[in-house]
Image (cartoon, rainbow, N blue to C red; front, side, top):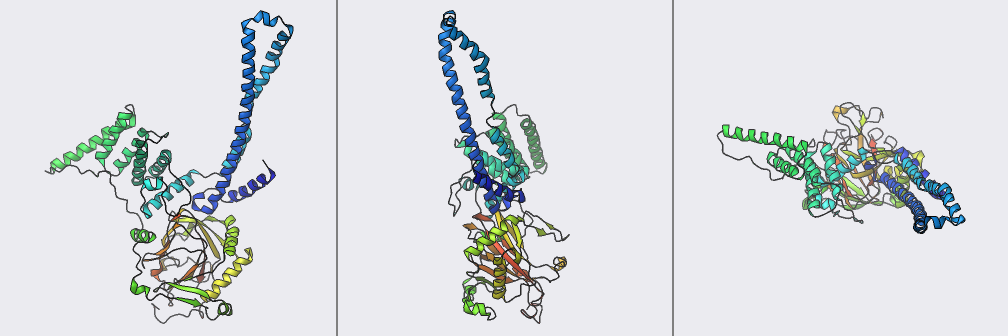
Amino acid sequence: MKPWESTLLVAWFGVLSCVQAEFFTSIGHMTDLIYAEKDLVQSLKEYILVEEAKLSKIKSWADKMEALTSKSAADPEGYLAHPVNAYKLVKRLNTDWPALEDLVLQNSAADFIANLSVQRQFFPTDEDETGAAKALMRLQDTYKLDPDTISKGELPGTKYQAMLSVDDCFGMGRSAYNEGDYYHTVLWMEQVLKQLDAGEEATTSKAQVLDYLSYAVFQLGDLHRAVELTRRLLSLDPSHERAGGNLHYFERLLEEEREKMLSNHTEAELASQQGIYERPVDYLPERDVYESLCRGEGVKLTPRRQKRLFCRYHHGNRVPQLLIAPFKEEDEWDSPHIVRYYDVMSDEEIERIKEIAKPKLARATVRDPKTGVLTVASYRVSKSSWLEEDDDPVVARVNLRMQHITGLTVKTAELLQVANYGMGGQYEPHFDFSRKDEQDAFKRLGTGNRVATFLNYMSDVEAGGATVFPDLGAAIWPKKGTAVFWYNLLRSGEGDYRTRHAACPVLVGCKWVSNKWFHERGQEFLRPCGSTEVD
């Protein structure tokens, strides 16, 4: 291995050691795995070259010995009559053949295995694979993509072709099954059967697929289809013990259902679901609205509302710096007022902030409303880090710029948070401010509630990744270098519940954002209180 390659390995080992596991929550950290895999391929090729050289020597020896023994075996006594041949035979068997044995037993894989063992401790875990599978299913649901579309890699804005094999799809279905998600189990196992029927080669057999699929449809309440699929399984593998037991059980349940119908004096047949199943209802009441907005559907930007939205040059409260170089300001929504600013951060500033944030990235957390403890949650899939002004001059410069734009002081604001979203990265609908039932959320800071949010988009996103406001019917799409700003609190200090918002799953791309949460303290004269509760 070359010295510079060794240096690179040490560098990315340092990064990986800080962020072991949960790779799926940050595309930025997943890029390190690309270099790890590239190094393993190089190591594997070096091993193959050594093996090929060894086999070449063995083959050459075998050819030489084959020619020699065919001659000596034809006339052993005549061959050994020559004293040199006799000497060489003794020497070969005493010295040369043991040397060949040593060559054959030589473990040329040791270096590769050692390299693999070192790197393996930084590999993604089972948790990562499950998280990655769930991310694909999240994208499937949010953007209404069928498994065939995902399997063929037909996603908008993609530069690279990527397809799922039969075995990949089987892995998806099995991950869903292990999580008790029978809805997605059925969808992906049916995709496996489709690709197998199309003649695709795979290590996965139809019997394996039918084993999972039959039980999954049973769990979804489709007894007719469970019986049908189990019979298909037994026709392929008559000795399958579990399938035999399941079939008897399913048939008994089916018979009991028929008897119930007869006792109720109805001749109606048991309804078959014909393989179509409803997505289970989950914990999020505005799920449909939220996901529709993520797809760009249901946006309530009516012509009447659009007439109230304008563009202008913004100089803050006549801040000298902004009088010389005002920012372009665009209304995104009228009430509550949400604005977008253009050219807030340069490409150089963005890259520098990403560079200093990346080693600090850790799984983003949410505050448990009951306990007040910060914890990870499936509805927030990203990694984040907090940057102080001492970390780099660019942080202080960006903070001051946000202060100039908003007219609010950053002295009582939180640190600059940088976030990178992972596979299907999202943050489901939430409030930035603390509600009355969680009064101690920001007590430790001693700066009051979050009065406003300033959100910087530090990357473009090829597809997905919008910031949506379900109660408003608003959707704001990321544009690199721009920022959006809104107040979370009314002038009275009451929370503005219309600002409940979400970061939609990233369908294609790598989403980077940074945000500054301004707090109440210190803003008393910069944003005076209103006279009524709804001001």
